[in-house]
Image (cartoon, rainbow, N blue to C red):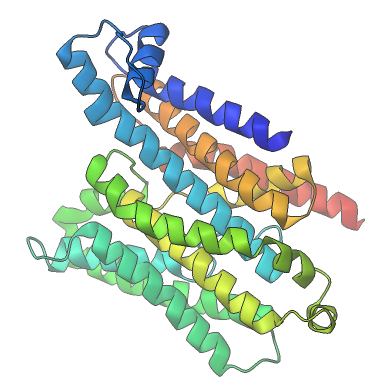
Length: 332
């Protein structure tokens, strides 16, 4: 029931995303045009070539990119929360954001005009940050378990952020471009959509396949082992898949916070704690959430535009405080 409702919500906000903008196009015309894009369907929406180009070249790829990025971040958040058994874990926990930010800054400030594009640099940085955190946590030994890995992620994040700040000071004139990327952007067009889809497909498939095993991990490693589940292997695979999802999303959209905390938590409240339900609901809910956030970013102060990361912060920060208060109430 909740999955069906989430799919209907996603369809509604995607249509709303196609409607949002300066050009006045009726909702019925948008629905007919979307139907005309479907295979084996022919519908005359009555749009001019300019209006059709506006929908297909600008609004549609933006809506699709927001949906893919939102779904990836939310699903990665659910995966991290399952691994760490902590509903407050998020996709940037293991240094992915710091690594992506550092490499993007390097590409913009130190290597302008080179073959190292921003998406490639961000993807490499996110993967590198996670690898450093995992290597550091593994070198520290198994005594701390997931807590050791979290502390390693915090250390790597602090170190990479310090380097990024230093690099920024070397190219002050490029700061605006760097900060624009840090605050998030989903207006990259079809090229960015095509770039992220293969990685998204792999990450989503792996995470969906491990929903039942994450449920088993929730009862503890020893109990999981008695049921034939190799906890360490499952944890590593889920971490890699969630990190791939985070890295690919960051590569095409910049840093967009709170999606990986807000959406999985809502999914858990609605559908219960089983990750067989939380993972797909997070995927669909995250897509709907970020499409709606992008719509608000485009329309709240139109014709100007807010960075999408600012909108998610406005929603996520109060939600995060509310979650902390709820957990404190349960603890007391």
